[in-house]
Length: 121
Image (cartoon, rainbow, N blue to C red; front, side, top):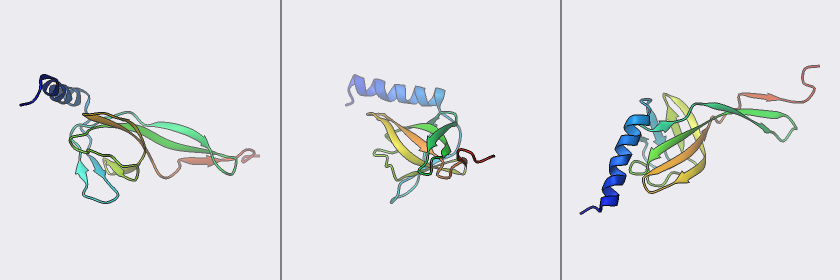
């Protein structure tokens, strides 16, 4: 028999994902293994980040976060790919891993823009 804590956690899981979950088609694909279609995952909006590259320029990349149920993906991998409405994102970081939820940072593998100082003179 499940404890009261386990039952409350399970109930909260359903309520949180039903209220905040996204209806997008989201598929988690580990490096080796079968793809998993996620049910009502929580997605943040895309944002653009700038990072310096090795040539002294700036690399812009698209980033977003995904919170999924650990009942669907028990041990997320950094080498995994997440497809959101047919757009492939790479798992770049595991932000938080709890008993019921896991939050991942996703990035688009290809840079949006690369620039260098004095590029447009």
